[in-house]
Image (cartoon, rainbow, N blue to C red; front, side, top):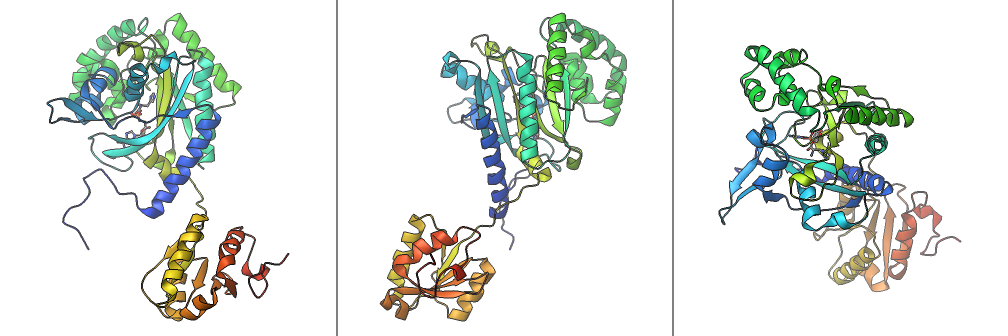
Length: 433
Ligand code: HAM
């Protein structure tokens, strides 16, 4: 049946079967991040608009075209966050977390909002898992972050991801490069799209972000930033690469990888996967050594990345363990309160119980349990209830035993071990020694 109200274009529901995959991926992310010393942080979805205008950058596509911005009832311009990095920097300054011993390592999961043209792998509400590190300038950290990303993607079953890296320089070397770039971009301007023509004026670096093949062809003729790095940035880049080699990580230097956000300095990177189509970046990130200061905080450097969960789950090969649960239904009048009490006790023992209220005969009950994929069925008629027992049927083997209600929880707990079956139990409730 089609409802008259449907989800907003570019957003999607994540239904229970799929949620299991998300949970599995999130659990692996948490395990990996925590092993590397990251702690979870949570910030609001809604932020003052100026946070992104200032940090993400006035000339970026995100800020000029894609933000969900509106005036709230107090007359303040607010934005549904399009990315996470500015929010975490704000929170660190606001709560003076920078006073804690460096480096600070944080991770975060949550929805982001960008009003772009929806297509495969590009949504208006999408989810990122994000990590950020503050207070460490050593290029070995840049490599450690990619080493963690590589390990994480392996754990998530992503086959043959490709790592692209670049350096976008710093406030010392970038202005000279930008004026040269502008001069050169002026020459090809007539052959660029309208957006890129504007970019040449405002921020010629953004020409490299354009996805149109014509613009990409032209952008390939422009000078590359890696040829114009100052000595300090060149040293940082060389050291970063040698640490990547130390970790045995494969990578490709991609001089056009300037990333679509303004705050980056020095290291930028993306991990792409051929299984994703046009939107092929699973994760992207880099250094942003001056962002904290830009927001009026202390001069503390930062680096991080964000991974798109929807894109990740398109290419991740994750095994979700089958959920084993007990099915309880079909009691008579007298058995009902006993069944409900039993159900509560089992649930408190951590046993998953699927409870249904409709009365069914035994045949219908077993067929329904089978359809639902129950591992066990509790058969509790009035007669059993009076005797303080129930039938316990194991669906996989078809074995059925009469079990005392007092022992049921204990038996089910033991049956949770995958190698155990009801045949390991004697005819009555007593388990074999
Ligand atoms: P970003 O490259 O804009 O970087 O986004 C990171 C990842 O989010 C992308 O690689 C992609 O997987 C996913 N993503 C982005 N836009 C969409 C979309 N419309 N639909 C689906 N997935 C999408 C950032 O957001 C930076 N804050 C990353 C960062 C963290 N840099 C430093 N720290």
